[in-house]
Image 1 (spheres, rainbow, N blue to C red):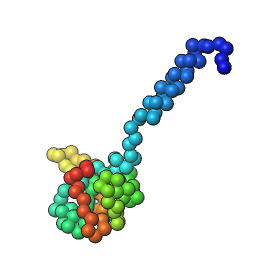
Image 2 (image 1 turned 180 degrees about the vertical axis):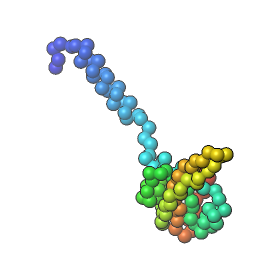
Image 3 (image 1 turned 60 degrees about the horizontal axis):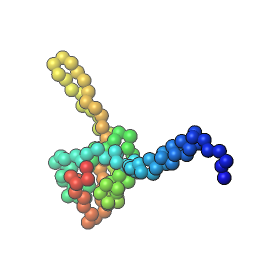
Image 4 (image 1 turned 30 degrees about the vertical axis):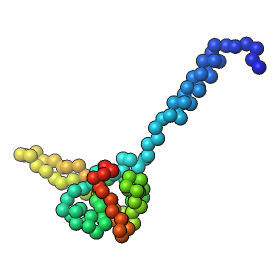
Length: 123
């Protein structure tokens, strides 16, 4: 039991409880949301889709495990295999000036037989 009540103590107590409420109501985001950037829509990707292989542009820091977990979380299908390629940016020229496009990373995700995903749905 407190004999004396100080305003400073009361302010601290309310500040702590309001802060705890803010932390509890903060939305939880998955670390795998930013792994898959976009699906690649090319002729080769369309052919691979008929073989249950899907092609995505992924973050440059992504690895096989992270891409597999991101696909499982976003599409609800656990991939059978994940292959990753680093794509070098092409050298380009505009007049006399030369430059280079940005390098990027591509992932080819193989799903189990009979499984399909709609790549336009979750991205």
